[in-house]
Length: 342
Picture: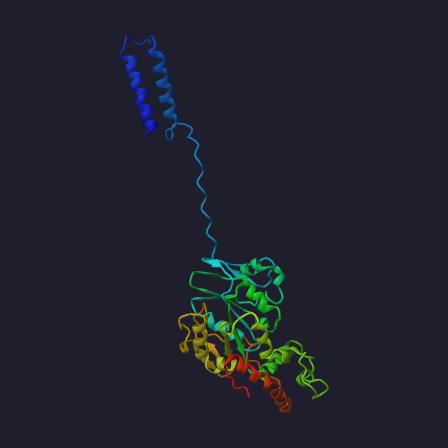
C-alpha cells in the first residue's frame, strides 16, 4: 500500500543517514534524505487514527423504508391510501356499474383473493374529479406487487357519458365489470336508499311517471340508470365487447361462488374464492363472508345493504316492466346473455 511503502521508505532513509560518515547530513545526499523523511511523515498522517483522513466522495444514503401504515392522500378527503411494499399502478380492472346492482358485494368478495388489491372507497375520478389529473388518481391506489391486480369501483361511471373516453385515455386495455340487476327492482332499491336519507321524498309512483300514470319519466336517475342498452352503446364506441364482463346481480345473491368464478376467470386469476367462503344469511337475504379480509370472524355487508323496500303498487311495477322490456331485450342481444328479467 502507498502508506506502507512510504513508511518503509522513510525508515530506510533514516538508517542510511545514520550508518554513513556520522550524524551529519553532508553533500548532495542531504536533499534526498530530507525528502524521504517528509514523504514518510505525510504517509504516516494518512493512516487511520494517525491524523486527518484523506477526503473521499460520500456514499449515497440508502432510501428510507416506507412505513407500513395507512395515510391520507392530500386533496382526497375520506380516502385512505395504503403504504407498504410494491408500487401504485393504474387499475387494470374497474367495476363501472351499476348503482344498487351489487357492486359493493362483488368488490368485498373479490378482496378475499390474495392477488387483488382494491381501493375501498369510490374515488369518482372519471365522473367528478377528472380535473385533478391521472397522477392524483394513481396516488390513491393501493400498492401492488408484480402479478397482483389493482381495482376500484365507482358505479356511476357506467351512466357518465364522458367516462368511457377518459378510461380509454388512461388505458385501452382496461377490463370492465358491470353488475346488472332487473331494472325495476334496481329502481325501487335506488328509491329506498334515497328515501332513507330524505324521509319527505314523494312516492315512487310520483317520481317514476309524469302526470300520474302518464309516460315514464326517464329524467329521473332511478329510471334512467336501468336503460342498460343505451349506456352500453356509449361504451362500445371506445371498448370492444370482449373487454366487458356482465355480472348478474341476482346470481351474485343466489350463487355468489359461481359468479365469482366467472369474474376470476375474466381477470386471469386462479379460482381462489369459492363456495367455502360464503354462507347465506336468511335475515338479510344476502350471502355473507365466512371469513372477511383481515379478520377471523364472519362478516356481512353493512346495514344499508339488504334494507327493506317500500311497497310499490303492482300496477306501477307492471308499467315499468313493460317500459323496460324492449331495452332489456336489446341488452340481451348486445351482451349475448339472457338475464331473465322478462
